[in-house]
Length: 391
Image (cartoon, rainbow, N blue to C red; front, top):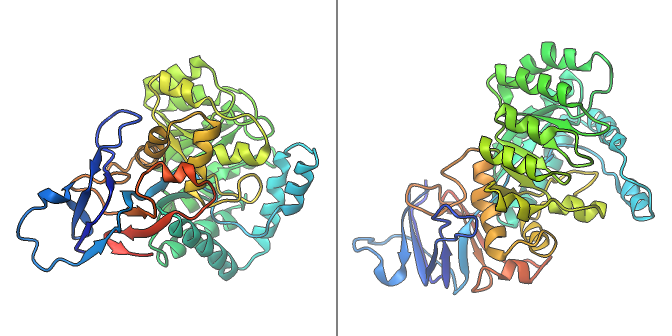
């Protein structure tokens, strides 16, 4: 439970305020951390008296912001699909069935192999400023492997300083006619104790709206927070289902309409946008501006997975969101921090206000626009998790 004074910052972004572009910017700011949480934030010239010999971190004139909250990843898997990606670059379309390639590799991998590979991806995310991430199962599609993937996530969570929020995604595909019955009757009772959320892939070639409803309602009966992959490949009604069920988030949302946006806003469902996936697939991007215009809270996430977005870099996602989704730097950073926290229903994350968890990123540049200005470059100078210096 660290105590620390972070000073010497050109800017501190607190994310205070409700607006989608409000950063709560403090010029020449400082942050006092007590017991791993933010105790005070403000201009360094106004630092409170009585700090004593509090350990210090000099930000070196860099910008300080909350740790990134990556609200959608598929972190636990084995193998890769480089051949599939190469084929796609040659003009072959994305095939949902490619998931089964990863399922086969994941089932064949040992638990130790899965732990090491998942831990390495978590550490990669941490080095790039991600201090919280949601991570799904979904590459088992049988009871034993789905539970094993959640156990792997729990093991990795004990080895890394990244906060991992586990989600059960047994409803990634429905490979057999009786699969959903198996999911409800056997998989969920076995897996729910290891998860916080329940997700379903509602799209063409995956689950229908009614199949997704069945999976999410069953998950809710086990106390799991519902989430939904929706409208990635086509508009099938997934966004409206997410609104009807009051899901914490609806994710992807490439093929959505103003009707969908109005429903999500009214239901308080966060729109988790995944621009790196569209980048890798050379496909259309989600209509971010439409969501903001309709009052929908948006989040940005990596969608880290072996088939369509093999990246752990939230700074890269922020840069793509600015260039391809048309977001301002302010909107993108808000979505990558406070928006992700809203999608995970973790109000104490994604901000630097008194009482918040002291997860911080110090940039190598003096201005927050540096992340969008240097796509693909490492502009993270330091990472703190719970007030402890990790990098």
